[in-house]
Length: 422
Ligand SMILES: Cc1ncc(COP(=O)(O)O)c(C=O)c1O
Image (cartoon, rainbow, N blue to C red; front, side, top):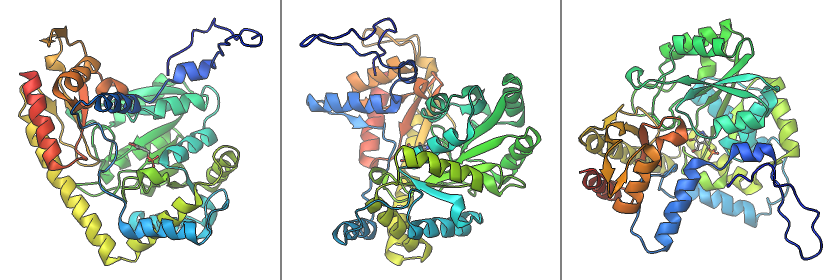
């Protein structure tokens, strides 16, 4: 979104006269999602006939498994097309509670879970429920680009805790303590994300235990974004709320987007302390209302089939997981072999956050590359490869390379990058 200068007030507007409406200061400050801007540019170039391979995707390239889609279709034909309870149908909430219990050993009562239109929506409502004006929320950076604007919309202030590649892009106790201090007595909460977008970092139980001690000691709340839970390749997945004394301080956000290739269905869920979940429900009742009844039926089928160990779904998901493992190998091997490119091998999610900064200052195709935006543009315009500039995530040295695409496309794209840098 282009910011409209603040002094362009709406003119009175006589009949037939063009009126320029001034958008709010909040809207001017927030701007558009950077990842989506890259996608728009790529679509435009494709529309002009350019051959573009996308390594920009934030979603799996697989179709939603058939039994899940069929459950959605059945919901339409059987008339499940009306409003549902704001926090979700009883059936879906029961499935969410069973999922939390089985996968995460988290026991939630019925009124301690809520479903919404995507994990994005659920995280937003959690922030609205937790943040007061001027409250400080710590966000480890680089981060998913939507956290800081969401905190700002909720009226809070973000303090970034810088993640270091040499520490595997993981928040350390020292980093957290110093971010709390930077909040000058106003630090209230922390957003955690494991497996992490964009770095693929996965926290072990021991690492999370150390962070939990600080969270308790400083009397903070936390939102744990676990949307990539089922794409954990190395080590065990740990849910932050399972750490000692965290159950009452943590909202656990998750969803079906990445677990079941269902990004378009827009269905996320959360579990957390009753008072917070009830506040989220009240807020949601005035904003998005209940998520789509059809998507809820499909999500319930996804969670139920998975809980029941349905062999066909289990096989489809195993095949997806194996494909992702192979793609990660290919992406890491090729990127690590590029001259002057450094990376931390991702243990989860489907991104490699690779440091290309040693190429900054070079002249490529007649243009001096100053940072990640220039490099991503160069790769898009001259190599036909879409990546996401690291600056979008708060780290201008890197590009985010998604490996959620076929090995053929991945190979072509990585060869093109190699050529474009040589
Ligand atoms: C870290 C992270 N959290 C949340 C989301 C949003 O997920 P959903 O599709 O459920 O809204 C994404 C999507 O890319 C993500 O990367």
